[in-house]
Image 1: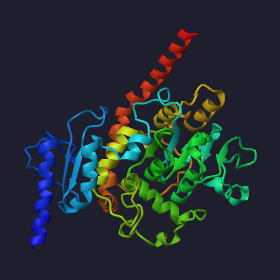
Image 2: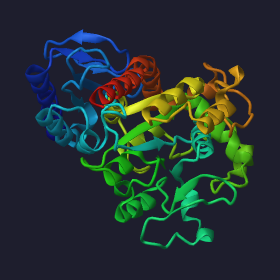
Image 3: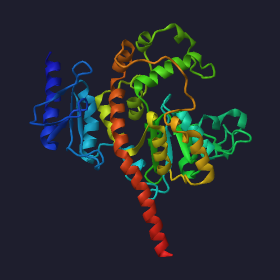
Image 4: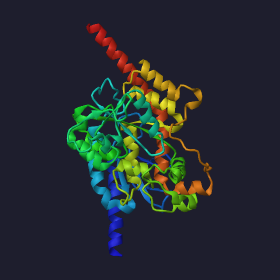
Length: 407
């Protein structure tokens, strides 16, 4: 009992001290409301077991430079102290690898021309369309096929760029950056430093961001987001029939979505987990969510699966793709030229829909409550980033004008 009281007292002291020293406002990640803070008011999560959470930030528009932030999680305060100390001392809401290894969202390709592009492939969220579009354009991608033993480059210790499919005019590299072991191997081989890849694909954004890049060889990250419930429903039905997938699950045919939602799953709060760099066995919490939101806000060119045409328009600008090039334009028209294809993806699978508010929807939303919050935030960022990404074009035009004057 004494130990519990001491722990609660330490947590309360940490909260009060952080608030009184660093903040004038308390920002609720659940309601997006800003409250004046008197040093003693704390917020209660409406989503999970009345967990108290506090984030101290100066109120500012999303596009402003990173504010100072401190996060205290009541039932995990001891583990949060180290991260809190870093955030206080660095005046940053990003962890070191994100702060120094990736370009800021406000830096376009003119300001960071040597940055290597990386696409975070969230399963069943349009990543296959991204691969196929840039294959069509003849780009060099790092995907799983690069280490297929049939090509004979999977055991080579040096970077090899090659066309993996005969008759197809696009290349890959002999690394697999979609998984952690492949990322470690790509780091040892100097993938980013070789500047051989036009676009790195990964399912491990935090691990790849930390391992592959450095302050002298930075990365630019982009991603397509999909409503977590819709994404999981798609995966549930897709893997019931996808015999070609290594994760084929025919046994799911006998299950309801409600029962499936009760199973332990690596998809639980998948996006927040991947951005935190945590493994399946490690729990994620609201602190991870806040850091994930800050990472999206400051480092990720956000796209939405429901806005494919506009999303890829922004990705192309960020990657400095010449959309007037005949081949590139033909590929864009093939994928997005028809007015009815704005939300169509090439790897879509038809399946029953889950209606919002239904028992199935609630079961998946409750289990993935952190991802639901992050997705709603991504929708907000998508609206705001249009002006930011369009400014890249203005930067490019200004750079061209300066070059013409010098000539």
